Length: 424
Image (cartoon, rainbow, N blue to C red; front, side, top):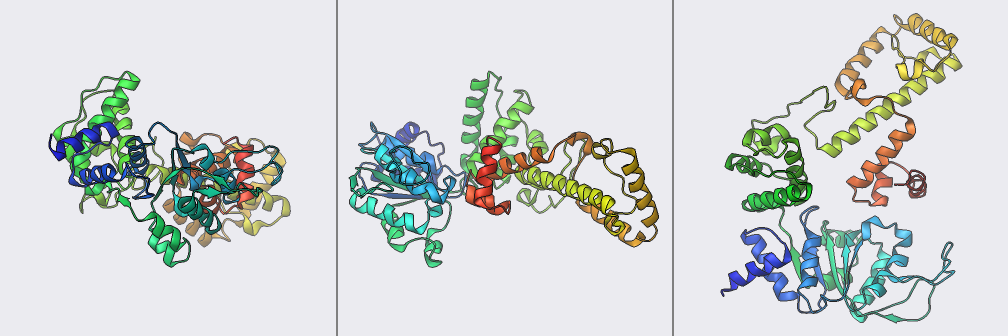
């Protein structure tokens, strides 16, 4: 058996799909480092498959019969990250009603995978370095050293060297991790692997959901290769599963790919920035699905805030803050007393001519920015929108609550309270 044949056999065991030179090089590196206990840093863009690499290293190591513990450092609030990693003593902080094991203690004898390690606070990085170098740590609130035989694999979609230069990541920990670095190539750099990935995803999904699988044509593969896949393998998998459902198991042709995949510059210079609107898609289609959904929710919040502002102006007698000629949405007007509605329309009519230029400007602005189709949206409450906005933003940030709070302009404490309130 040649070296390449052996690597391909290992690749099948790892479940890593692809025959590109870049992927074969990754497999070769895994084969070389897996048998050792040296720390490994896996770098690559979001959705490129870093966790799959960590699993392959563990499953090919001498620790494969011991646990592999995966920790998403970006999804754990900084205030409790150390407790999650190293455990805590009873009474060490409010709510610590009993002693708890941390992830390192749980992973003793096996491997711990620290995903998005670039999100860890600097003070936590000091303790991580001590565990990697000496294999010891203290529980939060404890005074005794605990020893754990753990192999550390870390991953990041950030440039850690740049974080070091900005003093956002410790230099000593960075150099300790980067002794062995595995770079996972983005999908746009290994498009030759797209047919294999698509066939695998389609076969698995159809089998799992009892859907007939008639495959993809060569033209369909060619269209898929024209797209750069910024979301990498994760985005490709989601697209394949979606199109298989939408086409009800029919053979996927090039025209199907062109119909469902967003047209933008990734398809070439002729694609342009065309916008598409249908009754069922009340958003601009030159955006990703997540961007479009978030923009739609934000637009609905904007409209509701304006409605409430105008209702407030009615009761305060402030006609300047009421948009001339604007009618209240039915979802609001039908719940208001007739007297309030009469007052509203009287104020609107009286100010219509006085504010003609402002009204024209507002109409032009609304024509450019309104993305809502009220027939599709239906009736929603502020709580419904807030809950959905938080859920979508959490999903966009891979459950990183710190990023989510920043995106939503909320304090982290407020976000945690709302997550608990909405049972997210």
